[in-house]
Length: 107
Image (cartoon, rainbow, N blue to C red; front, top):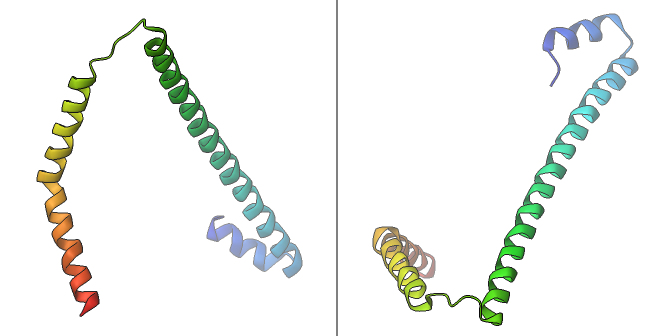
């Protein structure tokens, strides 16, 4: 928001309607800036998603054409190991909290 000293000065020395119009312009300019930043964030996210999809499609094409044979067993084993580690670290605790909360709601 604008500096309180400036708002006080404008409120004291100009008409009330002009004061409201100036504050409205300041708010609008800030809203447009936030809107532009939000649009840039959406554009960056969509660009990242586009690149990720292109990489996945390229890898699938390489597999389909026979140029690459991914080590599926190792990939699945690594994913399962990571899942077990996450569950052992925080998953059990979260599950116990959730079940306790559900029992409290059901009672």
